[in-house]
Image (cartoon, rainbow over all chains, first blue to last red; front, side, top):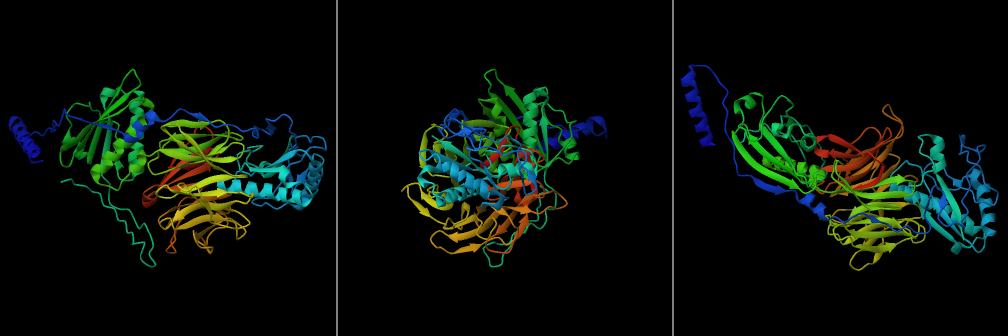
Length: 207
Length: 422
């Protein structure tokens, strides 16, 4: 510090001496040819991070409502004439009456609504007609709320449907439950209709 | 002696005292003015501009610098500097850098730091990477060292990896390691549904995540060897919500009888101990108070809220008395940050905002105002909060610098962030 100040003072006096009282910028030569090499420790670790691995996809998974097991029956969607709580549900055609129907839920709830009771009962009868098959019950949620809570909420919805099946004589050992939280939307619009369509339990008959 | 005009007025009362509150009163005074110069040697190359942008962002996020904005400063890396002129501009610190790219994709950044007030060069350093795409980490390192010269509060967290999962299509998600700005991203797990990644320890050598195999399965992955270990499976759902400070215990949400509850899992003995027992929803367990208690989310009042309990005691206490839908939380020491649904207001409809409370006082502070702000995660030092924001169709990673009242967003260009950890 003192060395630099001394250099500045000397330089200043020389400049003033040569040019009278004219003022000039003072440039300091602070070059230092020695430089320290620093590597970012976090960055260098990235050199050895493994290549992407593929998670094994089990036989139960699928996309867009299509199960990879070709013998499964996909739960049907609702006709366009169905209006629930003032919300017109998806207008995808209903399959024949032997297909399991998705069950819809209110926001942040997992109880079976009164308007879904007939549907659930119908599903029970269909399930009973496949006594040697397993049924996969998938719980789903809309996008609201944090995902961990939504996975639990989806599971509670699936469990409610399962409990209803068991109470009505379906063998509990034939029922498999899984929650997809908000990972399995059938639509992504920002609308009440879409959110309602996503708050559901899907059912699949697995042979 | 370094003439800093750095004076913060932070009044932080001791939180361990009875009735203590944490309060940011005011930030006043001025921060050191720093000029960052993309030296003429770089010829305004793309990489030099990216480095400039990254470094400037890091310095701004730190909250410890006043960035001098004058694009008219032209300087070569090896030339001497005009101290008087810089001093007249009010500059306290002067940083210039030079980027050197090689054909093998490696990058070197040479940096010089000058203290204008003491009129001396502080350091001249080289930062290197074998992969030019990792330039953000070099920028973070440079910012950390500039910050270190000021002896300002640590920003070492900038160098840490972020791990997050993002939904790609229905029932498909991938897991990505990134820097905190998302400028660097590396996909490390893909194929199928892979969710809730969680660092296994503070060294970030391994992580846990849930893979949807024939059942939801908790998998541990060593990111350097690629070794994978299936830890356990559960019907219905399975999430690793938190890891103890020494990495030996996990708080899991699992559902052995399709009933989601919180379990304490010992990674050494491989034993699980049930922590909550409630017929509704108990999720998102987080260690608090030296890992002796758990804060968690439960709907036992009819709506999601934050509760606490000792691991070994059945009694449960309510921790949050505000809000009607508090559905995720994170903890650091005696602090809890959580997401709460706010009613429709003049800002937005159905917003979820972040709040900060202390378990030892009545302190409460709102940290956000618009959008859907979820999944808060404290940094290791507890001074910053990472979170996910969904707003106007965009998914972003957010950083809140708690002590500086500043919030920053880094948008994700593809997919929707499902969960994060750092």
